[in-house]
Image: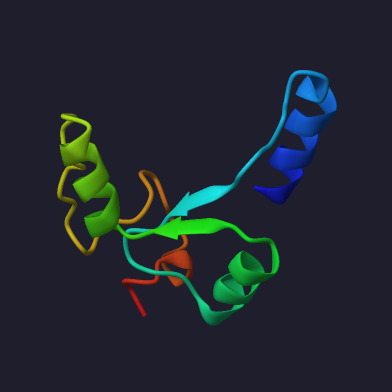
Length: 84
């Protein structure tokens, strides 16, 4: 995300007044991620918070996913935080 922000600043700098990173994490974040979020002033929203915003904006809420799903096609079960 930080690299993407820098690329956007480089490409759109003359038109960009401000950029703000905003992370949506439906199942929370790791302690290391929390440290990076704080260090770089990244906004963080939970699924519940984002759904409240979507409702306020008259948009549909996020769909429910099974807890045992990870990324489609994910083969490394060690990468799945829901599969210890």
